[in-house]
Length: 310
Picture 1 (cartoon, rainbow, N blue to C red):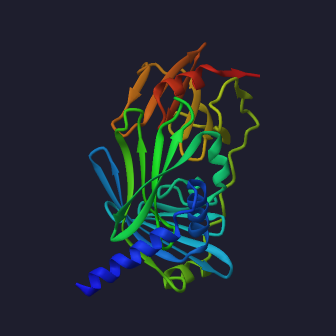
Picture 2 (cartoon, rainbow, N blue to C red):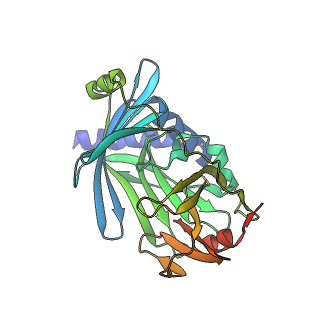
């Protein structure tokens, strides 16, 4: 009984100590923790009826961030980040590296970045507190400023400030996707596997595709906060058809836009999956514009129809 009372007192004192923090301050502390702390987390990701278990490690080796993401189900698949080089290791193809500040597939990259950039598309609101993975967490709501994106909410560990859970919700407040920690271990020093990863000679970063024959496609409308982060021009494997690829993000939501010659088999004009991933196809003359992303299909339609050649 005394131990239970002591635990309750500790929780109460820590709660009062954090009362003055704003929602943005919680998020900024979380961003800093994701970059600076050394930890290991076991995670489950829920997408509709699909469950994906992951293990993620992060540490600082020789003054640079090193991270490892391991997929626990299916064929062996890992991602290793040393500084701004992310290397993907899969059982059925040679390892390759890309330049990126984060490993995609865990938390949205913006949660470890400049939180102020998210204010272009979201409002930050303090929510309630609950226990996740045996740890007290403060919920922060990220409410969309418009109808062009979904809401989100994140629970921040009240001890380490690391994220414990991240949800994406549609406008009806239905859960579309969830990433949740089931075990969090803060480390006093980097894990041995991260130290070894920092010593490895990983493949050189692949060069971006040449755009000598790419077209100058531009958007006449984008939702507030969305920016173009990648432009790529390449030919589809097998049929060698040229495709223009444009990647957009607001920090939480990612959108991919493809422009190619219309195929012989027509694609559906619109498709929506149970986890909120939408696809819209728009005809532009003899070309097809395909927009895919976890945003409302109406947003994708407006983006695709705003694409013009300059």
